[in-house]
Length: 622
Image (tube, rainbow, N blue to C red; front, top):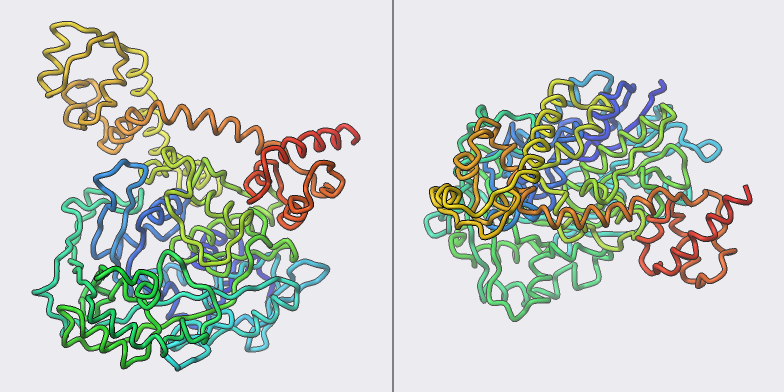
């Protein structure tokens, strides 16, 4: 049978990829090794976090599923960095990991235009440099116009627990060896990465009375822009905080000789920003303790995940280590922590649409591209799905700029700079983070979701009304002024604000540090009836006004570079004045625009100017 799109793998990337293709009207096949493991949360039972929350909000604004599922199965909701500015805050939710998988499985199985099959993809069928189909372990051949590989940690996956090794994509699931070999056979360059997970503890064996409690926010905010806040009522479960100690560290260091990380048993490179506990003890030996977060895995809270204790130490050492922690002295481990190493595709072999350069019509998304995290994977899956459909329809690819979305930053970093370690999103990676806040993702991206048919007209019209109201109020605040007078001083005093000393636009009042929604309503009663989320946007825009203007000037300059395309057949070797190193990098990455070229490490501004001159010369010749 022939499908428009085949998606290989039903993790976070595969779900978003297959659902987006199906919603955009394409006959889509989702291949998964185990149907009951669709949407499995292999590591921690949480969605979001710093910068990751931005990705989830952006996925939601574009019409993806992750935020809606999180709201439906969430156990606790918190805003991280709540005391800091809106640009660096991050939403995070504890989830019922069992219900999460059930929700996503049902969503996939009930989706129109989407067929789910429990088979293992083994071989890519390629004709004349273009994807033609997939062969499975059952001998079935499914033809397709496009294919998206979202294999996660399954490509030649190898689990490590002490000296024990086992080929697996996750504990209890087979590795995908044949598909890895098929990619290599088609000249796709693969590397080796490593990640890990933490022990899970039987709740009955934990002494919660001696642990520090960590509750959710008093007034939790849902992840999805589609979730109505008035209907968002949930019983939140607490998390708990524990700490390692000197004894814990001694147990670990005394067993370094049995740690696969140090014995040479593990070849893959692990995540720098989420190291295993043995790596932490080795690298930060001066620290006397490390934070641990004890997190419920389900609504019944029968099992807890020890976040911060990722390990591949032997089982007996894991038990001794866990029981050295206050509150866990009698702990019973239900599931031991483990490390897993796996093959990944060097992402510089992809275009910004996530299509491979070697095989036309083949896309890669998620951990296969060298990333780590559910959120990074889901974002790539959604973009790969959208672009696969656009390509079928012979339309231009959908490429988000770095000033438009964290998703744009993520993909641009991957395909232009590459990665040699698991890539994780941070707010610091986004140059324009004042513009790319969590709270305005709907305003930034819903137009695209609506255009692709991923969000409905009712929601989009609501976003448009919100955007117009924000524009209207900001224009009023910018073009109307307040002058020093006794009457104005009294008005400001009533809301506990200092008087003005010069004629100032009203936006300067709204931009004051302590000017909140309550003060806004009292000082600007004409706008008191507009929705709270709209007011929050207005106050944030007012506070960041001068910084936003500076960033917009930078963006305009960037857009000029973005619009200058580098011809596909452009010969970089004929550009006089470029070093051999720069020519080599330009040939390797084959950037589509001058801006993409500027983002390649080592490509200087002078080199960009030279390239610009040669491109114009090349255009004149034609």
